[in-house]
Image 1: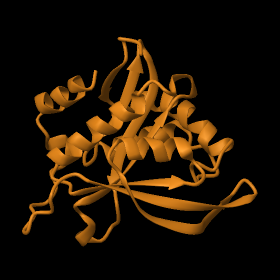
Image 2: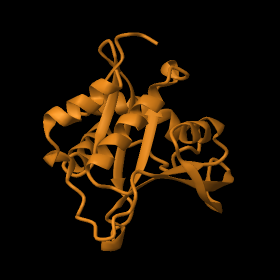
Image 3: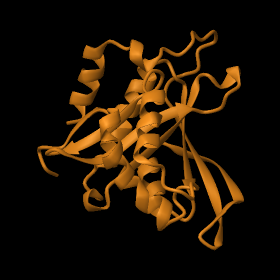
Image 4: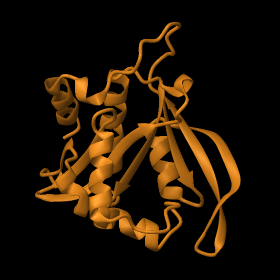
Length: 194
């Protein structure tokens, strides 16, 4: 792997590069159940909306964004507050370099610092590469929903993968918003995954 690959917090200016990585998963596969590629502005808005509460990270090789990962709320109801969903995508040209593992390692560490208890990854099947990534990152198969979505002329099952970030406390405090984590602590996590 290139020694130039580093992780940092995403910025709305990364939206075009993130969109370019995401586009094939919408247009050419069933990996994402979105059927229309979001505009650059929509992607930038997603980053702006997510960052105050949840991490959104990018992997940079030289000056190019080659991957990204982010967390989002698991469900709206209050009892789900300690669980989140996680997603990672890597550019086709950067596959097989361990970038997805590094993104997930940093993302899960940050989520643990925020006091989240569970992270859930959702995989449209078949997708052996994503299954392997989640297994390698400590996720365990939790459930499979049969014929959960129809895209590109076929029905697809969806599997849910769960990673325990920490033991569930008996009386948990609310998760800490991502924007409230100390910047030095965040940098330390990103630098641990150079």
